[in-house]
Image 1 (cartoon, rainbow over the protein chains, first blue to last red):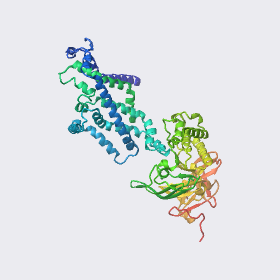
Image 2: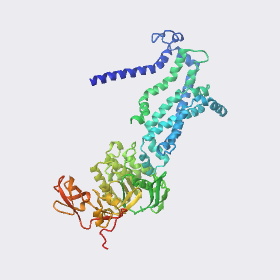
Image 3: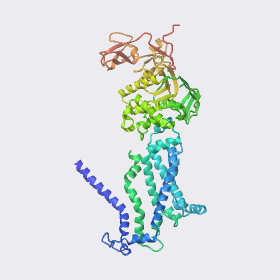
Amino acid sequence: MARATTASRKLGLTLLAWTIGIVIFFPILWTALTSFKTEAEAIASPPSFIAFQWTLENYAEVQSRSDYALHFMNSVIISLGSTLVGLLIAVPAAWSMAFVPSRRTKDVLMWMLSTKMLPPVGVLIPIYLLFRDTGLLDSRTGLVIVLTLINLPIIVWMLFTYFREIPGEILEAARMDGAGLKAEILYVLLPMAVPGIASTLLLNVILAWNEAFWTLSLSASQSAPLTAFIASYSSPEGLFYAKLSAASTMAVAPILVLGWFSQKQLVRGLTFGAVK
Amino acid sequence: MGEIVLKQITKSFGDVSVIPPLDLTIADGEFVVFVGPSGCGKSTLLRLIAGLEDVSSGTISIDGKDATRLPPAGRGLAMVFQSYALYPHMTVRNNIAFPLKMARLDKAAIDRKVEAAAAVLNLTGYLDRRPGQLSGGQRQRVAIGRAIVREPTAFLFDEPLSNLDAALRVNMRLEISELHRSLATTMIYVTHDQVEAMTMADKIVVLNAGRIEQVGSPIELYSRPCNRFVAGFIGSPRMNFIEGGEAAAEGAHAIGIRPEHLALSTESGRWSGTVSVSEHLGSDTFVYVQSPEVGTLVARAGGEVPVRHGDRVWLTPQAGKLHRFDPQGRAMSREKVLS
């Protein structure tokens, strides 16, 4: 009896998980399907799921109208750049908070997190003016700076959580063995925290890749990443669903592939402290 | 060369004072054990010497040089931690070589020293393994190997054997004692286990609430404890304490007698009582006696003594083995001074 209950419960949970998974994935699937339709079929009602005239013309059109390679490179540089700069700042910060905490460490962490609760649009004007006056508008450097600042709290929090799992005695042993601060972090702490750093890096690359508010507001053409590339298909000439979908699919594909191959790492990273 | 002198050392965390002013001199080549109950400050004291904690006031000199403000790496000390604290991502070879790499020795010298240390510690066959693939005893040896390659001024051990099982602990105890004999380097060893303290130490420092209660050789502490705390802490089972009329008859506030100094008889003696528990170890018999005159006493009899729960027995303290304490718990002269 108990076994039967467990089996039916398992089946129920499996069905539920699949349903949730499909609901979440459906918009992405629909976008990908739409990108292969003609504009007429894209807005047809009722819509056809797969029984339509498959075409690649949208991709050809998108490729001929805009420079995908430029936007792709911008996305790579901005997301990797902001993550690496973020790690450079966050590693020492998380080290000090995890291993030499003060009475205010908790408050500092909470304060950092609280900046994520601020609606970004609230600081858009001052940051826009700052960027205008310093010549950072529509520059990759500017976007790297702003995305570093946006994601820094998350990077610090994640690294802090990983570092706290590393026994302080090992770092003390390194100190006794003659390691200075640099050697202690470089040869002992970082190699031990590689899994955590890898998932932090992955998550932040994804977050930065998908960030649209700041990249749309602060870039125009030269530094525009893929988010701006998608957006360019939605506004000026009216809505072209099929082309918009093709652009979206091209923008999302690289990060989707990256996420797919690193999903184990990501899940382990996100649940690190909880299930160890 | 390995003399360590602490002068008026204090340590407080915020408003909490952990170590009140303390003076201690550890001679070159000595094996000193800090012993005391949990929370007595023995590990803190070791960490102050190591430089892992900063002293609140006072000075530490190592080898005649002021080391109070030196970082851990600058003190020339090596430490073995309770958790071993090996680097999990490095092989045994790299773990042992790490302090030498930090000291920027050339590769040939590093290899030579690592091989030599591994040979001494029976680790030669394990040099390319990682700590995760070793047993507890082997890990502890790697930790010791990492300490000895540096040829430090002194070794610091922070409860290094408490994670090992009983049999291995006895082995490692002997190995550390032999290591001390062969290296003749100063060693400071922290433990809460008074058997470790008694068997390994040249000099024991008994700590209680951050204060040094007594410093002396194991036998000095055993036979001439300066107060009730030391008397009760050193020796197993612990010393029996008796207060009241029996103590007053000896001219003291309390008297103490070790279990091995109580003669057990089934016929006659000074204090009578009934056996509540008897522990038969073969080599010894521990007998817990409920006496209406003096409370519960523990007696240790050599060999097998056939007493059981409920038996009526008599206990008599051996002549000259009674310890007398004043109301403050300080030891008084052994025998009552006739006035």
